[in-house]
Structures are given as structure tokens and as C-alpha cells.
Length: 256
Image 1 (cartoon, one colour):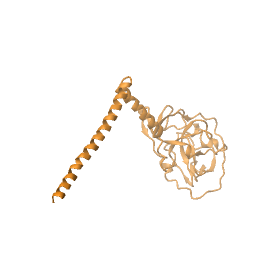
Image 2 (cartoon, rainbow, N blue to C red; image 1 turned 90 degrees about the horizontal axis):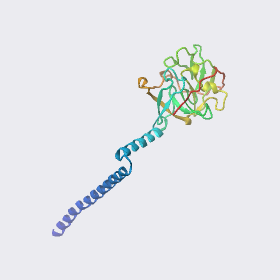
Image 3 (cartoon, rainbow, N blue to C red; image 1 turned 135 degrees about the vertical axis):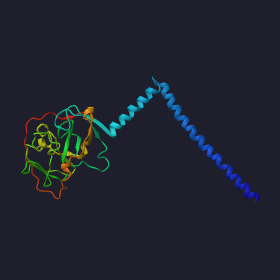
């Protein structure tokens, strides 16, 4: 009995010692980190204020590099929704976890080798496998046999397209158009170029989700409803293309 009692007492007394050692270690680590921050603040001109500013700038750099990036609209190719001088915030994570651009999305992409050495902003009209035709009997763009009502975002007075085309979008690429069809250099103007006017999905920087500036024009950008009713491509109709030109267009790359 005495041996068992003594053994129990030794077990009980050992736990607080371990707990105190762990607590002392964590406290030392915390004090070490605090001392490091304090020394950095003492070393920098301006002390803690400068350190805080540098931390905020570093966080902003990470944010714009991997999450959200602002772009300035330099032309009227996406009017009336996006005007010259507007600054849009592009969601760079929108297509990074298995999701892909959808018809009706407004995307920013690198046009190097396809449109020009710049970043561009356009609306996705067709995705891989889609059969895109202009135009149906009512003058509307047709995707996979379904006519698309673009009246909610198309520039007033513009036709869906003055350039006639009949294309099948290759897998892994996008067919894109500007909302201001009379003042947009887009997939229609590059049908006969390398790549056939299609943009590789891998070159998409992200989806434009918000107009952030000017403040009076702050708004969210949503997927166009007209494309939500387009069915997925059921097959691959014979591919052909009727390319043309609608005249000289303004340079419409976006500035990051």
C-alpha cells in the first residue's frame, strides 16, 4: 500500500513540472518574437509606424500578385458597362481551383501572340467545343443552336456583329467579344490569324468582378443572363470560318 501510494504521488507531482516547462518554452518563444519585432522597429527610421507601413505594403503586394489585381480600362471596347478610365478588380483565384471561364464572364487575358503584346478585357462568348455563329435570322449571335439575347449589355445601336462567322471553339480556348462591337478588336478580327482568334484558357489572368473606380461607378460585374441558357456542345459540327473586317479598331488593351 505504501509503495503504491508513493508511486501515485510521484506520478501526480511529475505533471505540473512538465506543464511548467512547456509554458516556459512557449513564453520564451513569444518573448523572442516580440523582441525581434521591437529590434526591427528600433532599427527602422520611424520605428513602429514604418514597420507597419512596410507590412501593409508587403501584404498588398501578395494580394495583387495572387488574389486581386486592378486594371485600368483604356478604350471604349467594353462600353457601356466599362468606360474609359474605369478601374476594375480582377479575381485571380476565379479559375485556379478547377473552375474554368464560362460564357458571359468578363475576363482579362494576356493577348501576346494572339491579339497583341498587352492584356485585354473581353466577354466570353464561346468555350471549348462550342459552335458559335453570327448571325441567326433575327441578327443575334447563336451558340450551340441557341440564340443569345445580348440587349442588357450590348452598346446601344450596335449590331451583335457586322462580321459574319461560323466557328467551332477548340478545347482549352475561348471565343471573346467586346460589348461595344463597333469599337472592339476581338476574336472576329483574328479569325485568319494564328490561333484563329481563340484565346487559350491558360492565358486568362482572371475574371473581372468589380468596378472599383470612380467611386460613383462602383458596381459588381455579373455573368450575363443571356448565356446562362445556352446548352453545352452536344457534338462537333463541321468547322468553317468566314472572316472579315469591320474597319480599324481602337487599341483596347488594359493596363495593370
